Image (cartoon, rainbow, N blue to C red; front, side):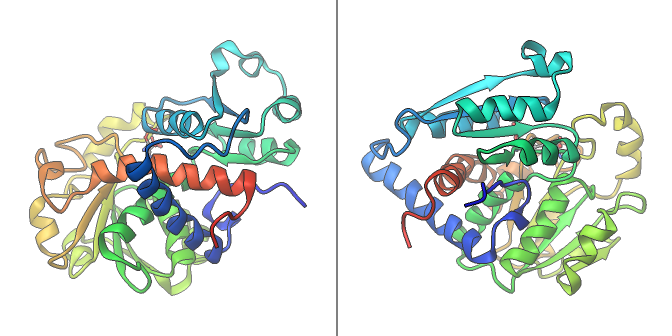
Length: 306
Ligand code: CP
Ligand code: NVA
């Protein structure tokens, strides 16, 4: 059977993704009830290549492997041969001989695809310039835990049409919900990615209008990793796109607020938004662990629970 990779949410079917969300919730409940006693990964190894910084992604993947009885290896380009120009394909072939899966956080999505094409073990996108699918597993899991099925509901993305926004678009396609994207002119998501979602995705310019009646509101930093030099220009361009408690008041009464974190208080969110009861960002961050366990289990062992 061909090796399955997880480079975007489109690599899994809607049915498989729905399974992963259910399975992640089951794994989370099992951990709460029994502690880390489920250890299906004895002697399994995950290589983790980080070309960009990370807190949540690194800690959640490493903890997931440890709690499952396996091991994770942190590899940075600074101290591997990747940083000295060893070809991506050669690295993929070498790692495939030794580890059971590879997780990569990188800049170029094309580089990630090149790695996956040469890898005979599953490759997981832990964030590229274009997508952040692992975050969306945790986000949809959190939304589902808090509010039940997300099908037919309305989410609103406020801010930059970036990697997170692209993954929200793919989530709208795969989990069948509506997504309003509200960004300043010049910061729209890739039109091809948005167009592929058909009428599930709408682009708006006015945050008040976008938020009206919404079931969920989410945002992200205005300058992503690799765009640090654009920070000042972006702060000016995104004026008026801050998510505040007053903006959440425009949404449905039981609206939820998500943020992949790290957050910049006083920029894309108000100083106090994360203290609002509608914000469930700590639960969301914690769910990275459970969602990634479900993903790793699926890629290495297949479906184990329906
Ligand atoms: N949300 C997220 O991916 O966080 P890190 O950059 O800390 O991994
Ligand atoms: N869009 C952000 C997400 C960080 C988790 C970035 O790429 O830096």
